[in-house]
Image (cartoon, rainbow, N blue to C red; front, side, top):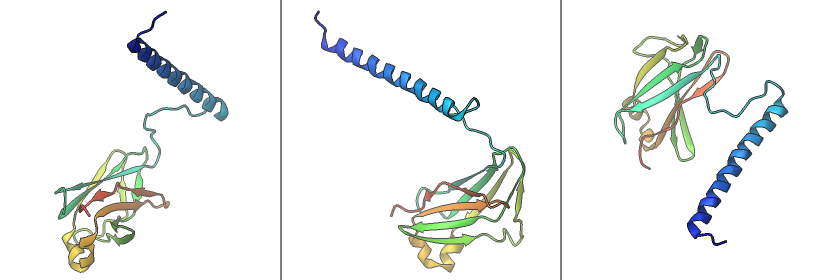
Amino acid sequence: MDVSPSELTLLKWFLITGVLVIGYFIFNRTRTFAKGANGKKLSFNKKRVPYAAEISLDKNQKFNPSTIGMTVTNTGMNDIDLNSPVIIFKRWFSKRKFRVLKVEHAEIYPLLLEPGKAYELDISLDQFYETVPELQLACRMSIEMKDRNGKRFKSQTIRLKLF
């Protein structure tokens, strides 16, 4: 029996995909049996939790932005009470943290967010650069907030400068 090289590679790919599919089902079954009847199955759906918040950051320019837009969304099923945000400037191995106490001369924190609601805040970076000039060297920035129970919610780190 003579087999061409293209048929041989096609047979190899069928064999590899078959082994991967069978391995997935075996892995999923063993996790279910290990965890019991109501064990977690392997899924890629996002799970809704009672208390969850998502913080996203938007910048007005790709590099050297002057304002950052922060949006906090309650993705949970219950109301969440958030303390004031902490802005973290990062450069290599050093960090500087600043807590936002007032917004336009008004104390609004702790902030109560209902499920599905969002809160937006524009943060001017110039005020930080004027008070602490070494912050102009910071290349990354993130924001974290804590709720009243101490659970911490972090945003993704955004890049302010190339280096």
